[in-house]
Length: 462
Image 1 (cartoon, rainbow, N blue to C red):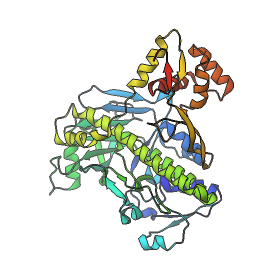
Image 2: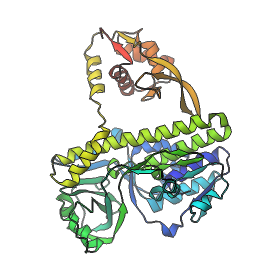
Image 3: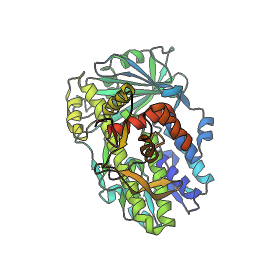
Image 4: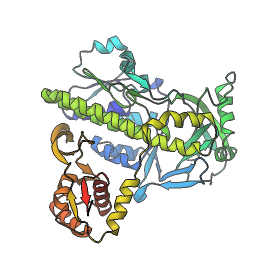
């Protein structure tokens, strides 16, 4: 149910594997175009799903990164690593590409709407709810839970520049925080940009008896950079309102139902990873479903693996958002920010300082003197192999029960076996690349430092 990125990704996987797949999607006329930024790392998913060539032909704006005015910090330009380019897309142009790819692999895509009873009467062996925020079956079964007590509304308009805009790279996503919310903008075509404000209607002093347009323009006037830029532009369309409040699911698998993409969880657009998250969720749901259909004895393992991964992805992105919001709160004393930091802080933030400290220690040491930690175990755990979920040997500790096998494409089990035999990083790196699939030196160093930081590897006299 649902023909967006999540539904199409799942359909492509399942149809490629030879299953009978029906995708029921809302009529095109019912879709409102939503601008989206897609990071360069999504290319791996495009390749997996066989849509990269079609994406390249579509003529989407290619972006080199973000320009950010956030909190009290000075403006910063964030370019993607290795000069990679992302994509600036709109949902109404992306969705037909993905649906055509699903059809070309053998899925049947039909336009229509299903209520809960109709969905139950289809007789499907497994149903995937990919209906986005609507969450038709997710809501009906009471599986959704709000992540915060706060509400966020996105008001999105389309603007045309009356003269060339030179404030920042025109391909970039522009992001600015202000007293009572934050704004973002992505290019559409040529001299046009989508501009959105993210506000809480209960705490942002909105004037409720005014039109959406007047509220939208009033909020933009509270920004510093955007307000200055938009004085050189004309509002062509909008604003359109979107609910952007975060949520996740109590369960991502309920019997023979899987919640996929935004049907299961939604993260604040600050991460700029919405489409990638949906595609990854759909791909993994397809792999788990295929496994359950061809190996019924692995169904419970496959579905548990899918549910755990969805929960983990949401937790990581939630923590990332926590850091962004906490940073903005230092520069804006307003209940909009304070409430969100208080609400989100229980999730903790992603902290790479321990990995960096371990890397600094490795670089400063004359001899690695590494040995495998005695607490490490190697046990069977579920993992993706091709189009199926299988049981494979993974590194397990009391704190890491799900198991770990790869960090930056480095096989940790192989690294741990080799580590005690070499005292110098270059020798260990060369030995690994001779015996296994070659990896880059930066990736190898990150994996090695992660092993030391997580205490999988004991260094020197530790």
